[in-house]
Length: 348
Image 1: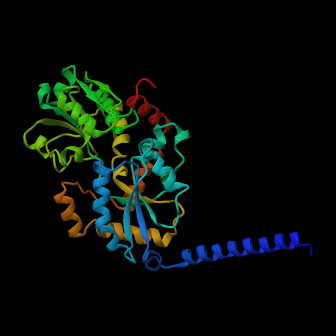
Image 2: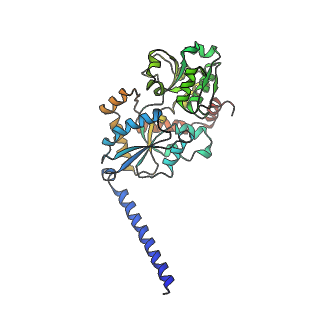
Image 3: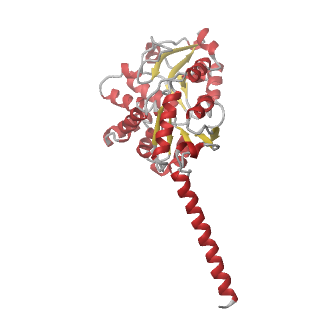
């Protein structure tokens, strides 16, 4: 055999052996019990935001407590993948991300984005993600600065107020627009603020009357605003009334007729924005182990104590309950989805 052919044959043998070795390693990893697999490994909690903010706070508290509930007690770290309102992280966990259970998504409202955003930007299917459950629901509230002279729902209807928001595909914009239509309110909504901190500063400076803020963004680090009544909260955007604000109605309570269906569609997405999921091809035994670990953590006194100290709301929903809420959104009729699209962005 000529020397060149011998080299080629040798190279083919090396490649084949390497591929066979990889296949053996993959098969071996897939065959491991969850405790064996997770022992001495590092798991990433992946979130679609930059450091700081409510997602980061929740993620770090969860990382402190989830590891000891997982068989094998792996190390847990935080990983940030900001982009497209959380869709970039959703796309990654669904497709290119490892499907071995070492990446866990701290989810944004992925089903809502799947139905309402440009499909070219969405490469995941929410129903095929393997949800562990929800640790709370994203509690957006209508916050109004005290210097505006407005504090009630009637003020929202009667006064010429200006509210701020982030991008038009952000819940801070969408909830304000839906509330405006559902209540017949007069206020205007301007978008383009980059962070919650920028919106809070704009509210303090009097540039805006308020905004639809995540409760944790003012309850954690801005406690004095609540205690000294620097902000009024006349309305919340959750499925049920918040235990922290039991006298404040939800928009779902106030919405009437066809508007109620639109509000309920958006409200069904609030727990998914505080949920965790694995990729669609993670082995079933690891999914089961992670779901059990997540559920155990949610009743763990140490976890609940730290959450309470950090003023974080906890409202546990099981994997089954979370999947059911996802289905309500993803399986909604095209006619309802079009109505919601118009409600959250009337200029479409």
